[in-house]
Length: 132
View 1 (cartoon, rainbow, N blue to C red):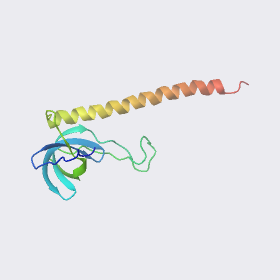
View 2: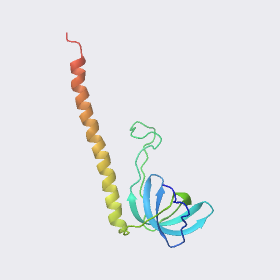
View 3: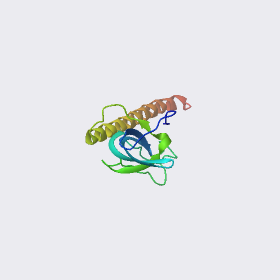
View 4: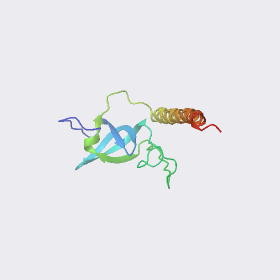
């Protein structure tokens, strides 16, 4: 995400901000140099789980758990990554539930894809094996 040209935000503006691997809507509290402090009011995308440097690899030394930022928690982010939030601001709890459900569904779809792929490869392995 990048700020639109000539876009400037003022304290009190509702903005969309990325933070780690999540995306939030919140109130701009202050700007200090290249960073801005945002108070979280809604979760738009739940943070991803696992090692971000090795995506979709379950066999890493530390599989990270990432919790969403809490309601009214303040977080610093790069000002250039802020975008205006122009939709109706959802309730924090329902936005958290929706973001968690979306992340769950994304991983469940990936799991089902992997299971079907393994099933196909299993059949192909039998096909490819030389007959004795």
